Image (tube, rainbow, N blue to C red):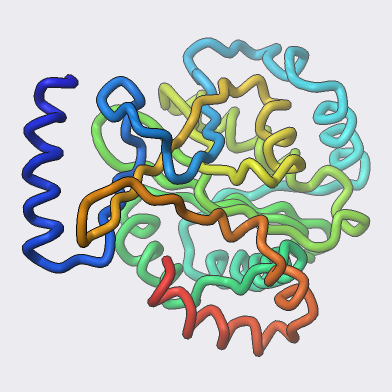
Length: 259
């Protein structure tokens, strides 16, 4: 509460300045305990899996339903797996997607670690859409802790014209899969406020929006400071034109410093 936060804030200020940190950032801090404006704001989406029935797709957006029917008409099938082979398949699609969005991909080493520590321990799943043995779209979902929540953590696909509804079929399959296995809630993860397309994709499943706020303080005097959402930056145009091997190298160099 606000009284506890006042004491915590004093201690954070003392530690930040004594350790000579450049800044301190807290993610997800509620406005009720920190009155200053957030340094960054993102959109979050959550879907209550306990509230949906067998006819739940009828309540989703019409465009989502049409794309799912189109995917089924093109004989696109979705599989669920925990194998590292499918993590590699996902990563190939992921590099294409990151290039399309104007951002370098995270290093594959990250996904190896996710597989070793979570997916291989039955705390994560890869859903992959195939047509004629070609992977068209894939998503990684992760779950940890006792609250039976699952998070849509990474998504990827080929160019949209080659994947009619593949992403939507992956998501609807995953929602059914986790609902049928007793999961209580699906969190769609963080989305940049600049990314209208992804926000509409998540809205279309009747997921509830909520704000994700970051607060940041300057180290030397612990005063609030602003930060920049890189998703809206001009560097995206550069990354869209990089060859994928160069983009992978760029990601290996950059993410150790900015992730």
